[in-house]
Each structure stands twice: as C-alpha cells, then as structure tokens.
Length: 507
Image (cartoon, rainbow, N blue to C red):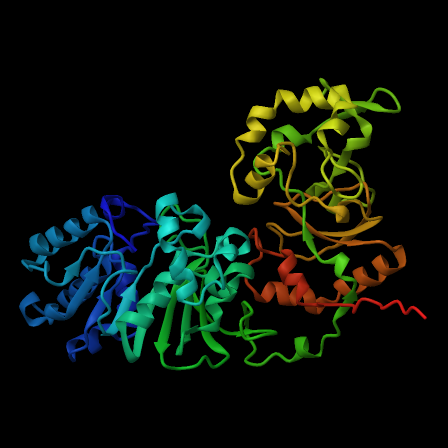
C-alpha cells in the first residue's frame, strides 16, 4: 500500500481511551509488573498515547519516579501525523522524555514487523463500508491476506460490515507480538458477539498463526467512551494458543463486575453466548425447525434512506382502485401494503398504522418503466421524488439505480408476497414474540424480521417451534437485548434446517 499525505492526516474511528480505563487494564492484567521485569509494551494505534501514558502514571502513583521506570521499553505507532506529534510533545512536557525514536508515524498495515512482549491497544472502530473511499481501496487486499474475507466481492456484500478493528488486531498479533505473547485490546464486542461479517475473525487464526481469547470485560452500558453507542469491552488474546471454552466473561452491572461464562453455542465461529452456567447442553439437543430454502428468514423492506418517499401514516380508499395517502397523494391501491409497527405486536387484532408503497410485481421483481407508465398517478409521484431516490448511497442500491431502476428498494423479492409470514421484532426487544400475518403485511427492515411461508398449517407448526423457550434463552444469552441485533435473521437461522429439494423422476 502506498502511503500519501492523505493517509498521514486520515482519521479512522478514532476513539481515545480515558487514562483511568488504561490503568484498569494495566492493573487487571498485571501489565505494569511485567513491564518492570523487562517486557516491551507496544500500542499499534496509539492516538495521542493515552494507554502508554497510563503505564507511567500508574508507576508514579506507586511512588516510582520517571527515571526508575523502563520507559525505553514503551513503543507506539500512529498513522495520523497530528496525533503522533501530540503524543511526542506530551511525553516531553509531562515526563521529560524524548520518545521520537519509540513512536512511529505509519499505517500499522505497512509498518515493518517487529516483535514485542505485550500489545496494549485500542484499534479504530469503523466498518469497512464507512471508511474513506481512497483508504478503503488501499486496505481491501489486507482483509483477504489476513483471513477476514475470502474475496473482494465479500467486501461489497455482507462483509462490508466487518470492522477495521478486526484487521488491526489480526495484523498486530501476527506481525508485532512475540510467540506466546499477550495482547489486550479495547474493542467493539461485535467482533465476538455478532453474527455475519465478523464470523471470520472468530476463527482466531491468521495463516498458520493461531491466537485465543482468554478473558473478556464487557463494559455494558457504562460510558467509557463518549458519544459511542456501539457495544465495547476489553479483551485479552494470547498468541500461539487455540481457544478453549468456556471463557471468563465479566460484565459491568450496577457498577460491579458480574462473572459469567462465554462459549459459542453451536459452531466454533458462532457468536459467544453468555451464561451463568459453565456448561449448557440444552441447545445441542434442540431439534431443528425444518423448512424449504425459499422460506429462509429475511429482514424486512429497506428503503435505503427513503422512508419519507415509500412509507405513509394515513390511507383512505377513494375508489376500488385508488387510495389517498397522507391526505394528498393519490396512488393505485394494488401497490400499497400495510406495514407492521410495534403496536401490531401488542394488540390481538391487526390494524394498519402505517403503509408502504411497493412498485413491484407479485413475483418480487420491480415494475418496468412501461408498467409504471400505465398508472399516471404512480408515475407522477415517483417522478416527483426521482432526484432524491437517485441520490441514495450504497453498493447494492447504486447497482439498481445505475441500471435505471431508481424506484427500487432492498429486501423485496417473491418472499414478500408469500401467503403467510411469521414476523418478529428484531430491534430493541427483550422477548421473542413471533406472530403470523398474511401476505399483504410487510416487515420493516430496521425493526423486524420474518420467515415467508406458503402453507398455513406449516406456518402454525413453525411458529409453535419458534416459541420454544430455548430460542429466547439463546437470544438472551447473546446479551444483545434492547439493541438492533436482538433477533436478526442470522440468529434464527441457527435453529433451522432446510429440506433437501425433492427430485422428479421421469420414466
């Protein structure tokens, strides 16, 4: 990768660690004692040097003088030149130390490998898809090289949500940690607790090098980092060890650390389940829910930022064929569907509170321009929002727009029009409460997920199986209740087995 001036001024998910929490890590993992005994300590993405500063401050609190501390064994690296210079100036002003030979100003992905006894770091937290465009192009190959995605195409699809923190951790352990060395990272816990993009990270392997998570501190709702809403914690990894489960897992609850056990419930790369029990065998005995592949759990409709165009709060039928939406937009009834809201999961009867415009055929394909032309009110309405719809961002929606289908959404297919759906709330909940709805009802991507089905008898069978308490217990074990990741489709897929397609014999 070629470094240029933009790289040197780049800011990527810079979340600086408060010194008090740096001292927490130092004390909890006896880093200070090891440092005094001669261990080298390296921060691969040091920012302004808060973690290395914490080591010195910890020593001063224990009545050491700066001259008695092995500061020559402190090393750091920072890609941003301004932060790099700030750290050098700070160590000079506060402690009288010249660290210019110890603190490098490079991208950690390009920095020449060198081995340290201990890594203490807080890598940048930012999904690949949200990285600056030029930097994104620079780092694609590194995600493949360090076993985080299989090919560049993955980075355009689900893998785009992988966090660059995963890459920095893998590179740091592989290139900068001595054999059997220990690393300690403040990091987004999505790498350990979420489905999807971060599954490759949970192989805990780079080429032939293995590493193991040993102990996890989950800060839960404690505001360690200001203005950060993602889930984060402090994790200990050891190089050249394979993971052994369960792990020690500590969660900050009511200002006290509560002890748990953490383990992948199904496969080794699954998200960690958190439990008070050291061994939980109940899930191993769970009988899979058998459905057809076409009934794969789905997320709901994704307007890609155009809710105001496609979602409506009021609907009035003005004829058999047409309706009035929000009191002013006349549109064809056949393309307007009831949209599920949280109220629908609390009431016995299904009463529409919102509606969605779907310019699609019942086979799940978007209307062609000539089909839209047959409905003047639909055509005029879409044209009035054409500019806004064409400005939507994202690889997948851009692909549709570039083909001329600027009125499409994501998460729409033939499954939207199956006779039945089993739908549940997948955002911000603490209970798993699926319901059965008819084909007219649509799920909202950011709020709900669903299983599309063609037979009511099968729908009743599947919903009965979904209400097995083991499923809700598993979701709760992920400690994601109340978040956007509460019950997303990937979590429910773990309980599903797809039928083998039947073969037709010709004689």
